[in-house]
Image (tube, helix red, strand yellow):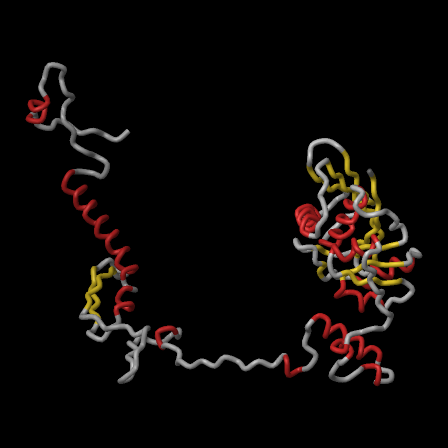
Length: 346
């Protein structure tokens, strides 16, 4: 059996009418939702199944197919829980049909209680524009929906209350237009309706209040963080590296302990090896800085040793080599043969 109920999707600030088509037939038991639903709409299958069972109804054992038309419009949110559940009950014969003039919206909990639905004014305004006579909305949203006028709004607390209302066992009283709760009617602060003119100023303040933006200079002022510790002299360019000792009774995590006399070797521009001695109070990080200047000296020292070796053994590139090893000559005997000749580089 096929059933059709009407719901609504909110696109921006406007409502779009959505037809919820439910078909209950034979086949492999299961529930399928089509019509470009998002994850929240897909999860409604489990919420609707549990809500129908916990409300005293019977979920059909056949295959249930649900189509949300138009199919090219993305359906988002749990707004379609109540129309899907009502469509299943109508298609399975548990509730009489006849909802062509009603807009049905609401999120279901597992026990069948309806929860708040955002965008209720846009939805009821769409029902008024389409000429619908009634709207079945969650009980918490009924006072807000009744402000639209022109549509009879029925506050629904649970799925069981809606079934009893449709079968005539227990009617639900419609919400009167303008019946706003006392807590919502009491608003403190300045009312912009008492101010004449200044439309641009009021509009700017409304936008700032809606977005949570600052509107006065005091909200932008922030005390600047002041430096509580003096800058270390070692971090200042152009100043000698001196140890920073904490005062008596204080702790300094950045204090540098002095090391003993350090000797650093370096090579001057004339090639002579020189020595630099650091005092007792010299911080270790200052002495460590000389390691980079020692490395070139080591290279020059190695180069000098190579030059001396070349002077003792002939010209650079010439090396004395022994005679080739004969096939029947042992390796130890070849080592005892004196060097003969030189190997000229090619």
